[in-house]
Image (cartoon, rainbow, N blue to C red; front, top):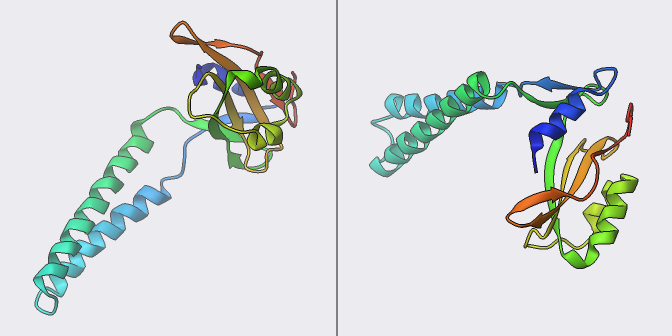
Length: 170
C-alpha cells in the first residue's frame, strides 16, 4: 500500500479540493511551554515542596519539554505536509482496515460503491489478508479508498482508487 500514491491522486483533484498542509505548531508549542513551566515551578518553590514532588516535576517537565522540541522539529522540518480538505477545513484521517479473505467480494463491493460506513461496520480482522487504505474526513462525506490483498509478501491492489464526495472524479 503506497500512501504517497493515494495522496498524489488527492492533490491532483480539480479545484484544489485537497491540498498539502502542515499541521499547526500549537500542540508542540504548548507541550514545550508546559514542560518548561514545570521546571521553573520546581525551581521557584524548591523550599516548599518535598523531594519526591520536586523530582517528579523535573522528570515530567523535562520529558514534556523534550517531546515538545521533538514534535516541533518534526513539524517544522519533516514532510511537506498532510492532506487537508479545503471544503471542510479539516485534515484527512488515514485508516487501514483489515479483513478476512472470506469477505473479499463484500469488501471490493463496498470500495467500489465508496461506502465508508459499511467498511467501518464490517467485522475487522487482526491479520491483514485484505486491507483497505482510507483517507477520509471526520464526517465521512469525502473519502479516498483502495482495497489491497496480501500475496507473495506484498500488497497487490484489488480495486482502483475510489474517491467519493465533492469534486470526486472517479
